Amino acid sequence: MCGIVGYIGKKNTKEILLSGLSELEYRGYDSAGIAVLSENNFSNFKATGKLKNLIEKTKDFITDTQAVGIGHTRWATHGKPTELNAHPHVGKNSYVVHNGIIENYAEIKKELQDDGVTFLSQTDTEVIVHLFEKNLKTSTSAFEAFSKTIDNLDGAYAILLVTTSEVNTIFFAKNGSPMLVGINSENEKYFASSDSPLIGQCEKVNYFEDGDYGYVTNDELIIFDKEHKEQKPIFATLSTNKLSAQKDGFRFFMEKEIYEQSHVITDTLMGRLSDEKIIFDELNPNLFDDINEIKLCACGTSYHSALTASYMFERYSKIRCSVEVASEFRYRDPLMNKDTLFVVISQSGETADTLETLKMAKNAGLKTLVICNVDNSSMVRLADACILTRAGIEKGVASTKAFATQVVVFWMLSLYIAKQKNSITSQKIAEQISLLREVPLSVKVKDTMHERIKRLSKRYLHGHGFFFIGRDVFYPLALEGALKLKEISYLHAEGYPSGEMKHGPIALADPELFTIALLPKHLLYEKSKSNVEELSARDSTICAISSLEFDKADDFIKINDRKSYMLEFFEMMVALQLLSLEISVKLGNDVDMPRNLAKSVTVE
Image (cartoon, rainbow, N blue to C red; front, side):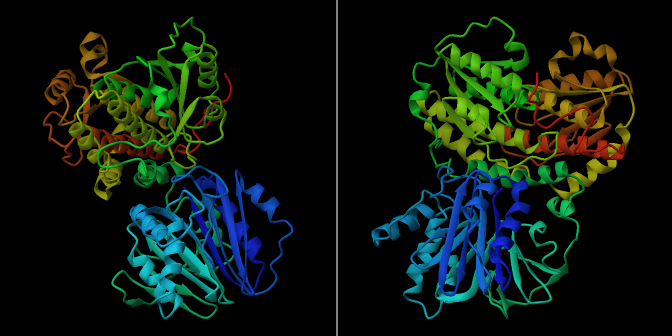
């Protein structure tokens, strides 16, 4: 997601910051900015859209003396992607950049406003710089003021702050969001969110631990831990491979993106949950007036998230819901009633078939909504309303984190509509919101699970095919698991509702047919178990994914005992992604660039 860079030294500060930000473009962003403090004067530049817009704005700005600088690429969470909301954020004499979420920003903002502080942006980040300047008035040093500020912040953050009170200093803090500092033989200091901006600039880097904070000057690197004890930096040799650095030590982008899901789901939930309702500031509540049906239209993985959504809309929102394959829908003569909300889903916002169905719905006078990962994409510009999934750039062709964030958005949207329609009780909505807060933890990849899947994957490199089976929302998850395996391993796989086995597919059952069985404890467990037993009795090789031991399974992937089937859904999703990944790796395939596929299908 967002990216941070910082620099203190005598080189061309502007170019170093812009170059660093360009190395972070792969993380995804919708605006960018830099602030440079030189000879006690600040220069600040911000631009929306691509980094080239910021480069154009700074073309006449020259830095050729000692300076400190910070830069940022932003993916909108609190507030729209505007220049005012872009980082760095300014106080009277200070600038700050920040990745993460300040959970108690609303309380801090109110206190500062009561003190007469005027805010320029809609972001949570701006409270940091104003709180620092408030603390500066009662502190003996800028570092004391910064320490007090960090102590008052709740949430996840990576922060860089510069101020005219200490003109040759960058203050930093890290908790839950990645950040590191590098040095070179000239004792210059470089900050970044990942290794790649520092390659070619530094030889050694220190990776901050959660709770670390401190400051750098021309001569010093001072680090304190969360217990306020000073720590010596622990330097590691920096990789020289930028592509490898972008992968953050993972073998493939797909693997990295599976591991990122906890963070991007946190970003997706940011600012959208209160204790008793879902908050979608980007939606006009009138969008749902006089709506009696929701029609979802998508392709591929997005179609599977839409199928999952259909269960939630009918279960929680109590509204009729249908799901369409976009490539089919566009060539039918569909009945399109004006009491239908037409929802399209696309990671890129450019999927050709889905875009055409959106145009059909607009021409028919339907209200339209897009669930998308790319702001300013064609669908976002065309639809009446948009909810961004905030997954960041997904480089692996086989979608993982985009699917996860789409399902999270749909879960929230089903509760948002339920609140409007009073279709379930406030207590039930509050319970669901509590579960949503646990999703980031449920998708954290456990080493024990990944190692287990690595070992058992070698069993599944042959045979004549795979059945992925599940019931209810686990049926679309089975479809998604089968699609992941097909895309990157080139093995034949099909997803089925578990109850459909006896209606024909079970004829294929033998030891060379592999069944991946999704057995959630909290949803139709006994029914699903019975279906798997039918396959086992006919000698199909069974790989069960469940929190409950299953004696008929040839292989068993154990998930945690979660309190809800939706939390089981997300942990099983991770298991299926890892299984496809490891089978593909064992087969020697290019995981990130599977044959015959493109990331964004912009042609018919």
